[in-house]
Length: 132
Image 1: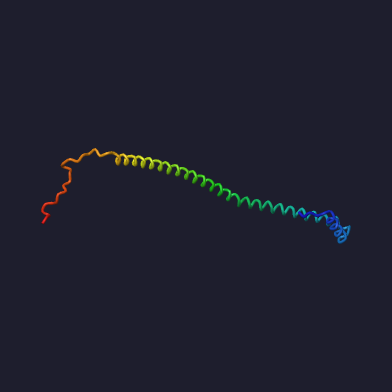
Image 2: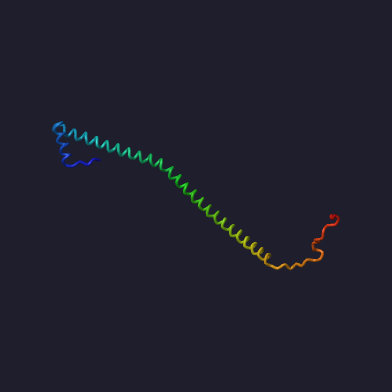
């Protein structure tokens, strides 16, 4: 609503008094009051209607937002669970790798206990029938 100073209000009242005269002033004030009341009522109705429409639009958006939050939380928890499973699998693989590495080191650094038998020796002599 516009803010009028006292001098502006007095100027408007003086112009109305001059234009319409003192006899019609009560009638004009009554009609002006009715018009202002009707405009306020229409503005209130419009505001209520707008707020109602806004609520109708906002409610589904709120439901979608809440649903997306739920999906995000589920995805986060699933991701955390998957991350834990991957970490566990990595620890198991690392443990197996370390164990295999130790076994391999033991095999490489251990002296050979096996002595070749005479039957197991390789004959380095030339093959028969193959010479000139």
